Length: 194
Image 1 (cartoon, one colour):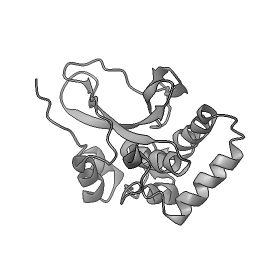
Image 2 (cartoon, rainbow, N blue to C red):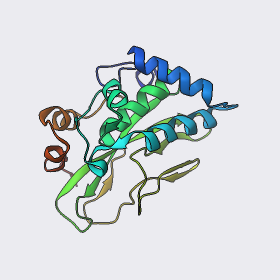
Image 3 (tube, helix red, strand yellow):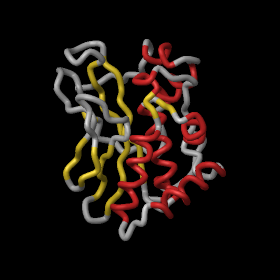
């Protein structure tokens, strides 16, 4: 589990602002158990950090500390922040992805970023701090998952891996463009193999 508790370039939980926010959230949670702490931090990222595309916000963020500083990020960047805040509170947290239809009815496709937390009684449990809006209602209700998007269209997939670091294609998309609309026009994707 060490890799799921560690700091890295994009999950920079050792950054002073991340450490401070993690301590603040941990203290304000009034949590009597790990689930309450996770729920509190999850709600902070889901509800207080704005999704870049929904709110048409710049700059494009990737590092957890930048997401916190600017209060905005795409789903991928928000997952980096959630991982950093949870890891800073000693909760093993990874990154997960779904491959979704951009339009909801087939090609083109893109990746959607979310997280998995390790709950001893359930194993890896996925949570999605993308941000709720009409038609999107992600929650923290273990053991049932309540993700932002169901798998519906042909070639959509829940990718089964739990990653300790962001996929390179995600980092490239977030680092290559300066504005939210440029990222929106160039969302990352992966090829599926049968």
